[in-house]
Length: 208
Image (cartoon, rainbow, N blue to C red; front, top):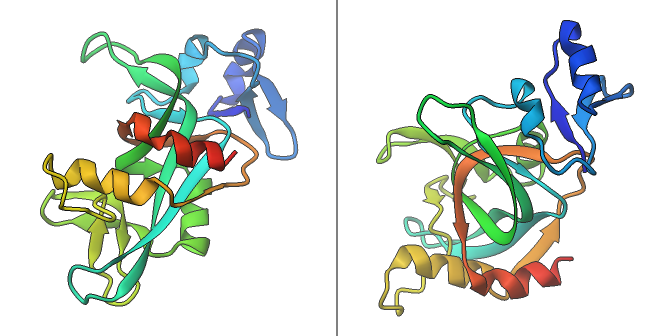
């Protein structure tokens, strides 16, 4: 799907020469899906980098017992099979955007675009932008539907694994759990950490 661009009116001809297209019913410029290298459009992409999630737009669903109130609460995780993410040559350089095709989930989410934020608010209100006191920063996190306690990125932790809870929770939430697609018109932007692992393949393939 296309990537939306923030193109000022006086730069519209420059964007058009590079291959950007105007979508009149939305009132936005986009990078058409057939353009793989988006680096020529860097002037209108986020300067701090991030990730553009390509189709299919995946969301994993599960549940766990809240660590505080001990009641069952739902969980979600945003994932991708295809995405364009940024790397930096130096702290002061512009981001370089690279296409990747490997199953990942997004953790430590600092920012999502307005479309994803609206979907979370309407359909998954327990997954919200909230202040994490321990980490001292604002993040998108799962919260308990009963007591509103942060569940974080920990999801379902199986502590029987010897190599630590942080990796275990990715296994227990996303292997064999329900995976669905979000119906989106455009690729969405997210600023987050990226967590990958080959044990995701089964769930991702089932969602397509």
